[in-house]
Length: 169
Image (cartoon, rainbow, N blue to C red; front, side):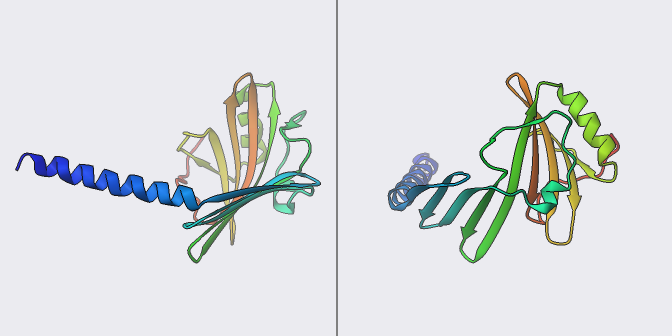
């Protein structure tokens, strides 16, 4: 009786490891160069992932104010489009990012002033976020620290983007 939980765990672990190995073995990754940079396609038994750079900025991202003096993290492309296709569901994210040597607090205050009606996401695991729900998407501004610079990400996310709570500051 004492060995039953151990045997169940070992069996589940073995089945999971074999399943992951089979998925990994059947996954194919391809890269192509475009005018705006490298595009990546991942094809697996679970679905596909496509990431491609774009030369033009989506108008929904272009409407978001840019922090004064912020520089693009990837000067070769205006934005990146990520598409995930799993079973019969497609999720798309459009994003771009900038950097500045200014502090997170200084950049955050700028966006709080420029976008006063945007909601604040209290889940700050990836940085401070301001979110605006729209008819078929969520627009997002994320401010975080990476090394010696503050990174500003602007994104168009699926409408069900999680962890949104209204808050004061």
